[in-house]
Every structure is written in structure tokens, then in C-alpha cells.
Amino acid sequence: MGGMTAPLPSRTFQPVLERIAEELERRPGRGRPADYIPALAAVDPGRFGMAVAEPDGTVYGVGEWRQPFSTQSVTKVFTLALDLAREGDELWEHVGREPSGNPFNSLVQLEYEHGIPRNPFINAGALVVTDRLHTRTGDAAGTLLDFLRAESGNPGLSFSMEVADSEAAHGDRNAALGHFMASYGNIGNPVPVLLDQYFRQCSIEASCADLALATGFLARHGIRADGTRLLTRSQAKQVNAVMLTCGTYDAAGDFAHRVGLPGKSGVGGGIIAVVPGRCTLCVWSPGLDERGNSVAGVAALDRFTTLTGLSVF
Image 1 (spheres, helix red, strand yellow):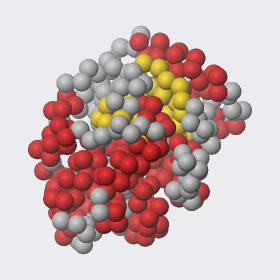
Image 2: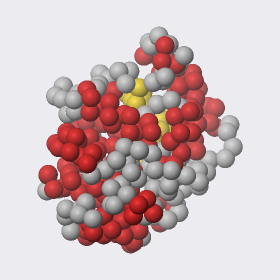
Image 3: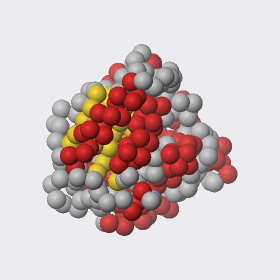
């Protein structure tokens, strides 16, 4: 009945966030930070922040909701939207819209499917989207950073070259994905150029407040913070749909079951989520489960939809 619940007055968001934070304080087990990226491995898994932004830009938060963290795969939502706005449905000829069921950096499926990644949020699919955005803009990572600065209202957002360099030093699997797809003609830029763009994209640091605000265009059905249209209503629906079915690695079914919102996670511990027409959320806690999703983040979003009755179902 979540989708049938009358919208809550906005003043209830702050008490809900505070209640969630109090409940999580008593919850044992927070998972472990991503250990294959050295720059992320040292972050305390007990840290937590959460923000909710309404379509008019009003934002509420709790915990370390203004603390910048490594956005990682959360950025894939924004590059998808930016490329979709530029090339429309042609994009879907180069990347699919189906859940993968395999690890996010798997090579296996690509061979069966002739270099067409299953969806834009596994690494192979994100590389295709970044490649296509780079072809159209000449600087995919810079275009993304400009967009996030504008939508969040925070001109101080920036790349972490420490994280980008760390990922590049451990980027053999992504390089393999890029070269494999290039062999099928599904990558247009030189693979080293693409990898540089992709690692910088994933290294952007932003807070829960920044990302909740930056995601607002998906709650506003494609309308940016300044009132201009980035996506058609149909395209915004497409992005939300792919988030719901593919946004949390190979745990998307469980996430939809528990949370009931379009969401996208990253191994930095962040998760963004969308209640179309109502609000956007970002939660951060760097302790991950075995599938790469924030343990406390998923729990917090689960409690949010339970306490508020807000859901797409």
C-alpha cells in the first residue's frame, strides 16, 4: 500500500531521519569498507550520514550528511542521464536495460552478448556510457562535475586524484572490459583515454546533501534545479526504471523488495534513491555487504520507506 499513502507534510522528514539514525546506532554489524581500492579501505565503517531533498531544493539531514565521500558508482546515474539527454534512444543500441545477475565487473556476459553490456550500471555498461558522453562533449568527467556542481549548488565539488590514481593502479579488469568491447566496435575512444575519464568520474567526492540535491531532476521528472529540462518525462522514467532493476549490483531484487525505490549504490558506501514527484535521498555509510552495498545505507532506506509509507509501489 506504500504507493497509496497520502504524502507526508515535509516537517516530518527531520524526525524520521533522527529516528533512523538512533535505531542504527543500536544496530550491530556495519560491514567492511571496499578493500580493493586502498584509498577507501581506511574509512571507518561506523560513519553514517543521510539527507532528503524535496523537489523545491529544501534539504534535511542527519549524522555526517555534509561530509564529502567517494561517490564511485553513484555517478553512473548522472552520466547516463547526461548522455541520454544528448543522444536519446540510440544509446540503448549499445547498452542493455536488463539486470545482470553477475558481479559488476564480470567479463563472461560480454562474450555471450557480443560486446553489448547488460545494463548501464555494471562496469562494462558504465564504460560505454562514459565513452559515448566523452565523444559528445570532449570531456565526460568535466561535464559530469559541472552538472553536479550546478545541481547541488556546491561549486566546491571536485575530483580526488588520490582515489583516481588508486583505481588506475588497480584497473586491469576495467581495462580488459574496455578493450574487449572495443574489439566489438562498441567503444569509440582510445581505451586509455576512456579509463582516465572513468576513473576521474568515479573519484568525485560529494556529501549526502550534495547528492540528494543533484538527484532532484529525477524526482522532478527530468527538470533541473534551474527549471530547464534535461530529460523528457519518459527518459526520466527510463533512468528510474533502470535504477530500480539494476542499481544495486546483483542485489537489485532484494533492494526493490526491501526498499521499493529506484536506487544506485557505490562502493564508497553511498546510495541515492528517488521517490518520483516527492523527494530524493542519499545515505552514506562505508561498511559494505558481500555484494558491495552499504549495510547501514540499505537498512536506513528500508526504515525510511517503512516509516513514511513512501514507495513507488
